[in-house]
Length: 298
Image (cartoon, rainbow, N blue to C red; front, side, top):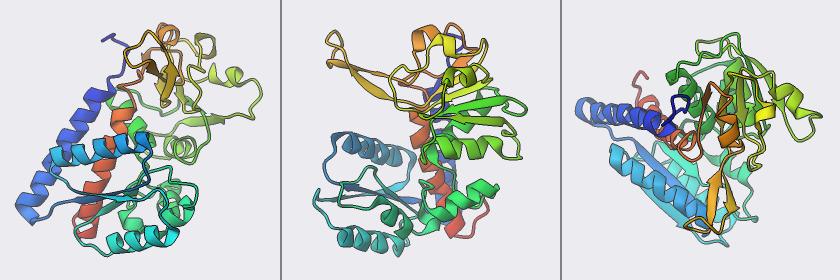
């Protein structure tokens, strides 16, 4: 692997090892086992793959897991009934409802129904608010938190640097901005957010000491949009048709990796960059939830 490539898979494995040690300590010294429930509504193939990965990783790290699969035509009442049951189950410390749900399910209502102290995805308004004001007794969202850990463990300190984020989603762009701008160690960046309505996006991205792409457009970021020596974090994952590939398609990020990697000081690949960190931080949050709910210092 090239010297300027951030190996997200290796860093995620380190985080997972630390999580496994915490799980073992909880079992040995406190007779506790963190528990995570994953809810899947319908048969979205991509969601099924993600859920399978999360359950498998739980098993590897010693975290108790439950997978609840509801029919594609499940009603809001059924979903809310299941969440209420999981809210009241002491064996379950974290609840994750796989996104996106079918169209008849209102995701906002579902998220609001999850107990904030079991909201390991950090979608509940209470946890989002805590994150925004800099409190750490809630949860941080898995992908943005994973990016922050990637930066830290790659020796990149955002303090005083200009971070430019492409994308303003509630899942990545906005929380990424909130984490980077905090008055705290590992943050203190000056942050600019650009999006689909920003004119001349490249004029902003070229200023970024740290450039985070989360726009959902394959290979959108080209070399001429990147500052020499920037740290480039590619959050995107897109499937594009490629008859020459084994599966008839290949996965690419939001960054044109081959050309941007020649200009960046550090860059994450796709796959193998941010993706593994998302699951690692989810399981980190599940352990944190177990500790908080059982009065253990985190």
